[in-house]
Length: 185
Image (tube, rainbow, N blue to C red):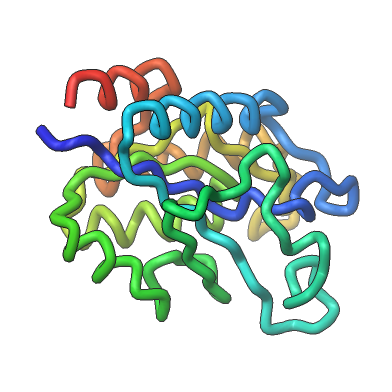
């Protein structure tokens, strides 16, 4: 089995700001950093995804410091960077082509927000036939009102997003299992 590619979604400075709201998994950035280091040491492919908003008032508008990658997770020149302006990293980004040209078949996805960009990207990856893994302790999200107006905690939103994906679009694993995938490739 070839090494899986690590896809890090939207780990931008704006995600660290209190204005982003109540979030879960405070250790997720550290887990992502550990996985990134392991992928780099293994010489495995890494893709960094950055959201660039079409809205000028957004934290992720072009030119905003909050749209830049978090310093601890800056891409190396050898690592692929994808910019997107919708939640799904495959839409209008060339990501699928980049992966196919390199005959990459397995993806390990981490980042933010579990119920938004992570879920959208993982759904498409699964639908495109990639072996897709989402790292539960390497993702986080924010509290959100459900359709009925009930405030759901970040933990509840996270758990539901992972449930939406598991065994249909992706396998939900933890960071230890992700490291094992890399080591046994």
